Length: 347
Image (tube, rainbow, N blue to C red):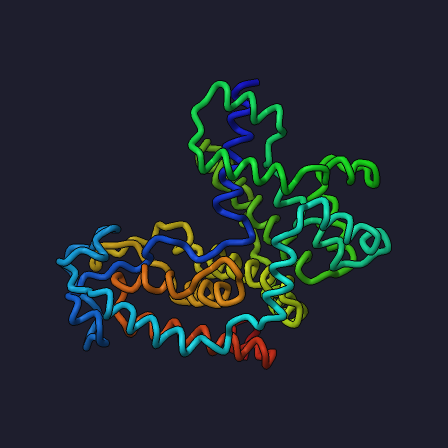
């Protein structure tokens, strides 16, 4: 029993911190370069050569890097100016604030009637509400863990907030629907209506499960299952095209697009196993990084300026210049429904 409770809390922590299908840009540098600070402020004539030591995380503000706060602030100001027209309107902010202030039960009460009448968006919003509460421990389980395990104050506060937000939704759903897994139930129901985001999330879930099966078989020496097929790219552009005028669904679609590009298109980067021995560091693809920037522009709780300032010392300036421009190009391509520009259909 104690082990089960520990697993429950662990899964909640993972869900709370990683926010599956709701990721904000990572807080760790992704492309740690090794040239001098002077070199990193201009485009080099050629890529960094071998034999250079990689910067360590935490050295960014060290005097040895040669970066000053004023230099970082100046660079970030330039990038934010380029991205300014991508940022949320006040109406979008109001809609996202209202969602953030809602408990899961309030969302359920708003959406359940339309969901029962077959509305795909309502069904998908119910699925997202249940996914956010999937690993929140019960009050009794949490109290037992607190009595037997040390939990820091931040974790206690996060679990308490989750319990507050999730209180009552399972009981309300149980009165209306006979479903052991409400998230899976409502996602399936939304997918059945042809809702584009639900269809994409269903396929991403399938891909993740198959990949997990392959990894398990590889680790245990069992016969490997057949290779998993990636979700069709058309599902990604259908989700983006459908959702763009709806700020809540837009953020959800961008979350899914980021997962598609980071975990499938650039799988080797997402898994952190693309080690460059010449540069002496792990890398991540510029494309998935641009999706992270774009997602951040559409979120209430993501400060793009802080993020850019944190990663600035670990990249050449031209690398972030190019990624910022790629972000703008992607935004314009979505508005124009130019899916070939995004690599989602053949040109």
